[in-house]
Length: 113
Image (cartoon, rainbow, N blue to C red; front, top):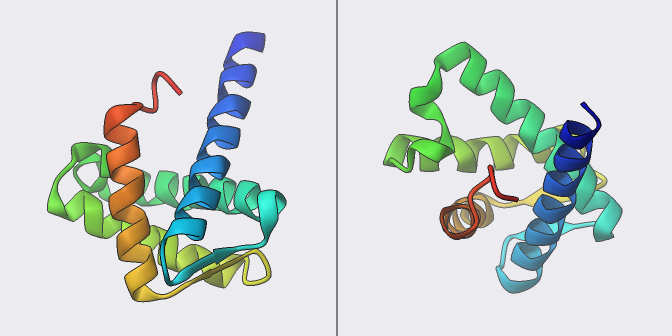
């Protein structure tokens, strides 16, 4: 049980770092430091979980399809309205972030991170 929590914490930290890197490299996405990126990673994960629970695995970004990509971009975009002081994203920024995060996730899958 302890290992599961550590793995979850590590995944959120890595996700926050990736989000910070994406915000640094791409236009249209801004995060308020590491704390903002960590909060955004948690909120994005929660929204993604809710969307997958309601709509099923076919909308999962892990499905690597166009629907998963668009769903990931929408989830990233919607997250800014929940935590506006920590995350700011344009539509283009959400699409680019979903693309880059999808590529990173393909190289370093969630199960390994």
